[in-house]
Image (cartoon, rainbow, N blue to C red; front, side):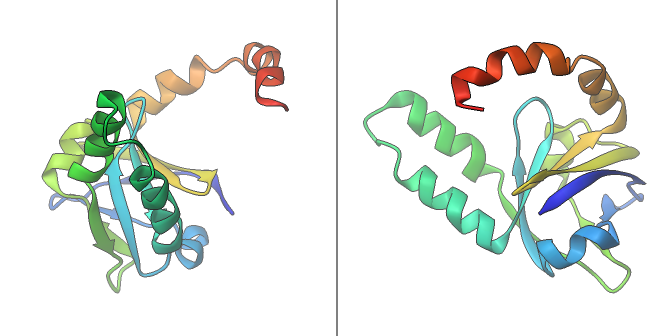
Length: 141
């Protein structure tokens, strides 16, 4: 399971270190795409196939479904970890998540989220566990 929070800097070429604790679960090659809330999503090959299967099952006749699929697939790219444990984030994905220097990688179970540090700090400060807990009964938790 992908868990934890890790801070790293992007180098001048847009490479980011994959935390050692996450490398085994992510594998040497993985998929990064635009995510929600201003971050990027990173999926292992296995989890990407699961996610992609769900996207393929959405109805082509539904405009929202088509836009949802476009959003995730248009920016998706396969990344590979180099010998120094880094991977290259393409310019279009760095721009989508406003990534310049400082990044935070967080594990959220089946995927990673890659955030600009300042954006993550603001997001994290606005997360209220009590407020979320009140709404979890709708999800059966």
